[in-house]
Length: 96
Image (cartoon, one colour):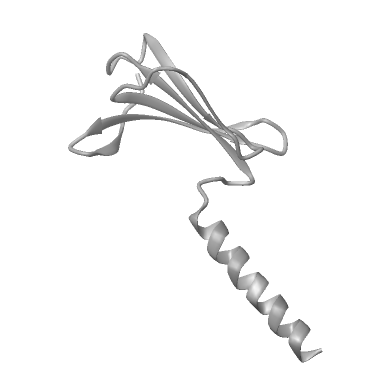
């Protein structure tokens, strides 16, 4: 019994460690749509971090993107935000 408890504990620690490094949120899908400039009018690409853990790409990336956070349970979009990549990081900006 004691050995089984140790094995279970080790398995739990490994699972928590691996899941803490994962970029997947099992409750939300993150969709990034990339645009040619800060007007967010001309779409150039997409990165879809799907609920199933897969990441899908289409088109190209740019320094301007929107992020939609979609609930996996029912597909409802719970947030929409606009971002600009500058000085080495993504910064939230006002959506047009």
